[in-house]
Length: 301
Picture 1: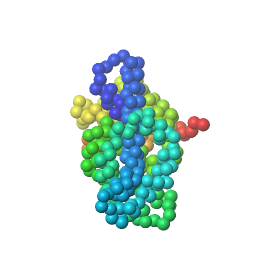
Picture 2: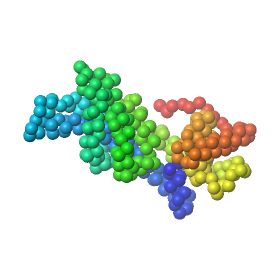
Picture 3: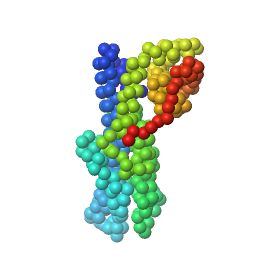
Picture 4: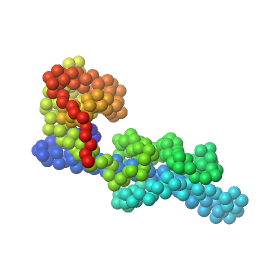
């Protein structure tokens, strides 16, 4: 959707050249989204690792107290973090994309000091032994409560991380999946080859079927001024139609529900209802004409 939106703002060129441009834009957006995902993970890890810096600073005070010599660094050796750092694709991506320059040490310090005062952290460092569930839970707590709920840090992300506002929801989804199963993630690729192929196929199909899609959409805009319909809504309608017609393994109900949610997220308050109504009416017409042919999805070996 974002790629098609960007494309709509550019000067029109010959169709094949337009496709090449579109593919390039999509690849750039996927790479940017991957960078934001890695940056989010790295901030979370660095907050935990800051415990070692904090312990050294306390121990080096000129007028030390007993508690200054007994600062826990347990979280720096967190098993969940160790598993992540053992993932070669994670280290390679950080080095390859030069992610480190997005990390602000002062925000890391502030986030750790906020973590330090939470009962969750105190319970973690007081536990008699490491527990896999607890190890992951405290890292997830850092991300969800210390980073995401920090308004100042979120404003910093918006100002300093390219694309954060556009891709924030995708990043949150990726982080949610990360905490479900980080060991299976290839950090060099945001999505699988199959999904990337689908994204490019959908992009090109929408471009190829532009006129036909508008033929289907136009009659459904009786009570709407086409010129006043949000561009994003039109793009989502075209994408939905193409999925229903040309991607036989995606159920029509899934298509409509997904585009309703995207419309609510990225367009106007009325867009979800608008996209739902138009796609549902178009689907009924296509089904009457026996143009919807769906089949069971078979996974590639």
